[in-house]
Image (cartoon, rainbow, N blue to C red; front, side, top):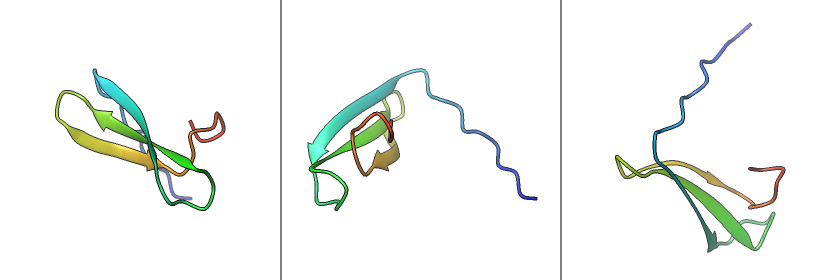
Length: 51
């Protein structure tokens, strides 16, 4: 069995949406560490299921 450590959330989490080209939705969502200005993840969709 493989186990992965859960990543810790940064102290400042920025969330933004943008018009992208993913097949699942018209808008995507980006999560950024606001203190270190690093992208944490880009989600295919901004719906509750992906957030």
